[in-house]
Image (cartoon, rainbow over all chains, first blue to last red):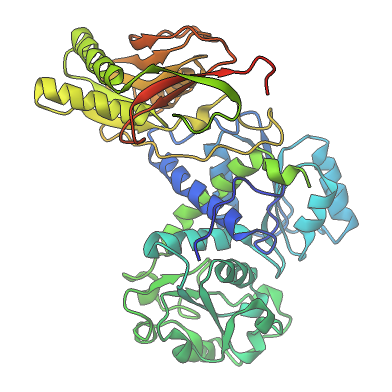
Length: 319
Length: 191
């Protein structure tokens, strides 16, 4: 099944992987491939988004993603405004809407939003003319992370089709796991979720992935092993006995990694908790591509900004 | 002979295989006359790339050594993309490859057709972000007129008088299966 690349994006927004077609995913990955080169130039900046304004609206703590977006915006010559609502009491619905209306008075072309409430970017997309890019919403989606993960896998394996990808850890609270499951299944990869029963989501079957309660059997034949952090901030009570016990059963150690396919790659969206879900020897080991993920994140975000800046594709604008 | 003639009432061949070959040879000779063999050729996507390769092959024939050849994608520097043109698709990006530093080199930008000059403006801006060449010159296979910017080529294969309603189509090996230049004339009623 060869994926046919789309000519353009069919929406003004990227609020999730779920609404994207496989051809659109292919277009974003191919565009990022060419934009990766901008970082190697003596002058790491191109004028493609000159005169356009991007608001980075981060209602949740973030370092990596916020910096990555900001670098991407600056490399495309966009002007950036940063709104950090950390610690403020930005609550649901009306307040977000009001915030957005105030922002729109400054006529931005893009709003990059991270929000603790699932669906916030989607709602915003419906009420403002700017292009909305989801930088992570609650436990829903984190589309740019899934795209940079896929991009990294493609760099190492050439194609996503037929890959076996293990995603292990706090699946239930992970928007990264959800977006990755949507993307990888659309592109023909096999996805295996691994978590203690208390950290597996109820909807696992409908995502088209296989669920495992233990790491060892899932690792068999795996090309990619993606470890996730325990998201203590999203659970009122701890859903497992102790960190120590979690490590004993679910951490990726060198011994466990040896069960995966030879040459398997280790990924982590960060931030890592060394000694909890991943052993330092693995995190810093030969098979780890964790820092490449960070580099690739900038190219993916540049690709999305570039593609959205052109407006809708001709075929899509009719509908 | 040319398949895509839907919007063109007639298509006339203005350069055949032999004419293209002789012209490329003469263009290479002019480059040598201007700057000797110590030049770097940079083709602009799409058909500047095979033309730069062909010119490099000619220079290799003269000097026994192939000059350095790069390729340039100017898309991110174009003045006709972005929000100013709503509801259109962004052009697909291609690779920019400059195998050696362009600092202090004599660079020949190479393209198939010189028309408005806007592509050349974008190419100059792109190139200058990579370094500071000693000189940048321009070599084109066809100059069809209608400049919108103060741009002139240093080496021209053929000057062709055209109207804005006409379309110049260049085919070059190895990107295409043959060499040739065609002039498409749009029907008077625009159908």
